[in-house]
Length: 231
Ligand SMILES: [Zn+2]
Image 1 (cartoon, helix red, strand yellow):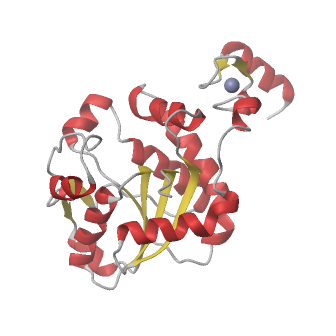
Image 2 (image 1 turned 135 degrees about the vertical axis):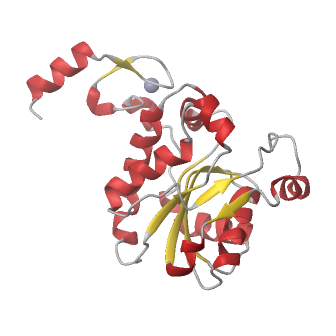
Image 3 (image 1 turned 90 degrees about the vertical axis):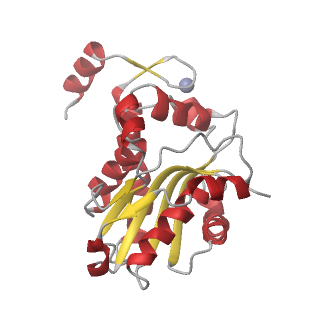
């Protein structure tokens, strides 16, 4: 794309920084450069984040984990996730997924992951929101990593109540038996599981357990945008 096109594009499609509201150019995408610099990227924490997620999930099939940023309740990250979940913005997940994909591309290229599996939401929730936010992230990742994303291999059959006010034990109980997985997993050796934010890990844990019930030797790599730190 040439500059003329870009400036015309931003003239007709002006957009605002999700965090502070100032007008931004097409190139800046979701947040302005100022707000971008406030995001706590996981770069220097990669190994810590990896072991934190693997420990939280505690399913031996989970061999690797990647996070994009540290999720803090009152940061730019909170606004990004809010936008992703509640403001009918499919685009947000796709863009973040692509950026995340660019970050992990090198690391992932030899991993032989066959499918990216977004954590499913119950169809009623998907209907209300118009999309599943994990699916939009998975599509962005898929585009960068050249790994197909499939939302047809797992389904959420229980419409669980919000997990936010529950403790870890209650969350685990609440989510139990929520997912059904396709028999096709028997023929798959390696998958990536994609979600927006990991807090207690109970949802992803339950999903991984359900998949492992179908194929006990499957290898799982986790991709989450936001990681809540437990210090
Ligand atoms: Zn801004």
